Length: 206
Ligand SMILES: *Cc1c(COP(=O)(O)O)cnc(C)c1O
Image 1 (cartoon, rainbow, N blue to C red):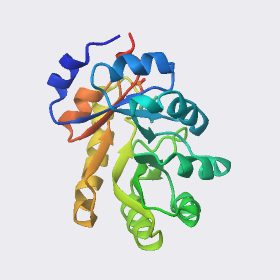
Image 2: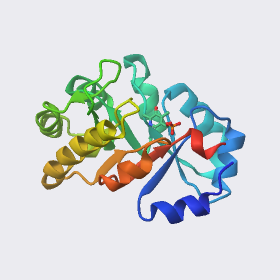
Image 3: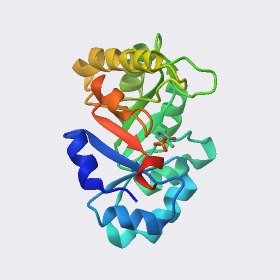
Image 4: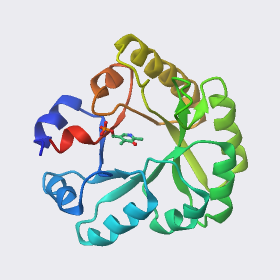
C-alpha cells in the first residue's frame, strides 16, 4: 500500500480520486485511514456494494465507467459525488429524464480517437457539451474527463492530454471547472498538461 502523504505532496492542489475497482473494501479503509475521501468505481453494482460496506466511513463515490441503461436508476439512487463518464448527449438525456436532483457530471472525451474507448470525439466535444447543458436541466456539467492515449509513445499521450485541455479551456466560460485526466502510468504528464483531477488505481495498492 502506498504512503499517500508523499503522493499528496507531489501532486499539490490536484484532486486525487482513488480508483477502487480492483480492490476490496478492506483496502479502501486503509486509504481512508490515510486521509483519502474520494473513490472511483467503474461498475454501479460494485459501487453499491462498497457504499453499503463502508457507509460508516463516509467515503465519496465517483462513477468512472460505462453506464449501462439498465443501471441508470441504481446509479441515481447512490447519489454519486461526480458522474465522470457521461459519454453522449443520448446518455445524458436518459439519465436526466430520471433524475430528481442535480447531478454533477463530466463529459468524457475520447481524446485519442480510439475505437476501443467510449466518449465523444474531440471534434464533437464542445458542441455536445453545450447541447447537454441546454437540454438536460438536472445534469450539472462541470468539466471533462479523458483517458490518455493507450500507447507507449509519450509524445502521443501528451498530445491527447493537450487536446483535452484545449477543449476544457474553451468550455471554462460555460462552467467547466474540472479537467479529469491522468492514471497510474501517466498522471505526472497529465498534470503538466493542466489536469486538476487524477484517477489512480494500480499504483496505490502495490
Ligand atoms: C481503472 C481506471 C483508472 C485507474 O487506472 P490505473 O491505471 O489503475 O491507475 C482511471 N480511470 C478510469 C476511467 C479507469 O477505468
